[in-house]
Amino acid sequence: MTTVTPSNATSAAATTDPLRLVDVDHVRFYVGNAKQAAHYYANTFGFQIEQFSDLTTGSRDVASYLLTQGNIRFVLQTGLTPDSPIGEEVRKYGDGVKDVAFTVADAEKAFERAVKNGAKVAFEPRTESDDDGSVTSAAIESYGRATHTFVSRTGKYDLETVRNGGRFSPLFKPADARRINEYNKKNPCGLQWVDHCVGNVEEGKMNHWVEWYENVLEFKLFKHFDDNDISTEYSALMSKVMASGFGVIKMPINEPAEGKKKSQIQEYLEWHNMTPGVQHLALRTNDELSSVAELRRRDVDFLSLPDTYYEVVWDRVNTTLRENGHDPVKEDHDKIRKLGVLVDADDQGYLLQLFTKPLQDRPTLFFEIICRRGSQSFGKGNFKALFEALELEQERRGNL
Ligand SMILES: [Fe+2]
Image (tube, rainbow, N blue to C red; front, side, top):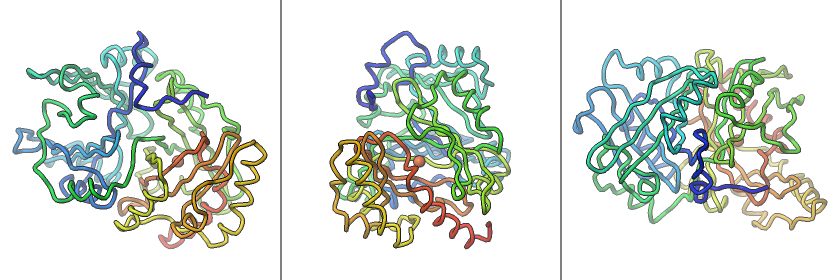
């Protein structure tokens, strides 16, 4: 299988297909206080606070902060007025992801095609421009409160320039020098790009949204040996993975399933105003152990697993790797255990992953820190151990 990473995705995108995604342009969050949230993501996850837009730059309704790390761009937004639609969403859902935006060659054409394919309009095309170039965006509604924005860029606002520190759009100004940005450069967390973005939808709606991604965004069901419906005594969820053409992003869709205990997906929905939304973003690193060690030093709150996990994991993972002709896990086993990192293997190799606890007070959005060594799957072998850990957390929250 050919994997297209964001660095070589641009050339793959140089075709006439309007829905050919070039990259995840950015992920936009709605939060209660963007100024403070920026410090949280900078201090705990190592993001650079790069640019902003607020009252001082002439934005009267919304304050926005652009945070970057590797090829990851987050835009944190807060409403400034009592009737702000952002404030209304924060009231209903708490802090969380509103939008996963895709860079495309022509946002208007991508939008028109998606609408022709059946998408509902979130907002019509609009262009911000100045002497340096332009940024055109248009958005469609996805599951629940989530949207997808198509973004096309010209001049000094093109993606390559933005990746190298150029201005994000005519509305943004560079942030002042900050001590935390210097600290992050010296102590990198090593997060590189968004590997996948998982949505939680209501029971019985997974296949509806799988078809939506097929029809509207022309994604494909990601073919992999474990992409059949997952439903075990422990997992209590079903999941299917949708992949964009050329693999810029994978978007698994979860729905709750009947299990022994309340599904974690059901818990999410109940704390998210019974509305589908983004459950987690998986952020990719090339060095899981350094990344997790640095994130732990910064007090990131990770899920912890029972010690028994490491009594059986090596046998399971290395047997799978041996049977498929791959080398065993090369990272130090003792360090993996001490850092509490999870390991899984499939026919293509292995992966290392670790999940944070919820990033806000409501048990909704969390992050996954993932490193792939050949494996293209999602850690199915860890489900049983993870669900036991998650159930313990749900019990602590009184939600089981
Ligand atoms: Fe994941």
